[in-house]
Image (cartoon, rainbow, N blue to C red; front, top):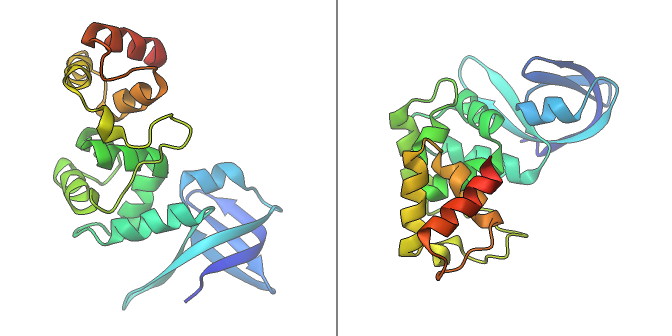
Length: 195
């Protein structure tokens, strides 16, 4: 098993890079975040997952251990293979994906190419207990402690306006709201963040 590769990016193309390490070029399938962060000639450290099937041996790579861990969790979901898992991370990013899973936002997950509504629901059901959203710097240790009647009403109201639950939850975390803040005020504050 190859845990990570450290070397120079020899090539960077659509959906993959070639990492030169010790005179050998490794073809690594990567999400968009890697392609946005490294280019040809850059030195990089890529955390990898090797997928072995009867027909193929493929490497999938990520800039952070957190992205790799999320990729591995997605692979435990029935019907999600390496390509779909990579697409989900590439489309949403690990932080947004965690928030979507935590808040039950199948709509956001199903925006990923190749992932339908049923698969998105399965991802949420299978990973909800295995994923914690990143709340660092939000002033909240546990987002569920904020789920009061007013906040739930505000979320439903904002979803009625066409906003996606993940987007709403992210905005709520940025707002200065408490259990006592009334529904209309929460909606106003969230709209200021989103719009």
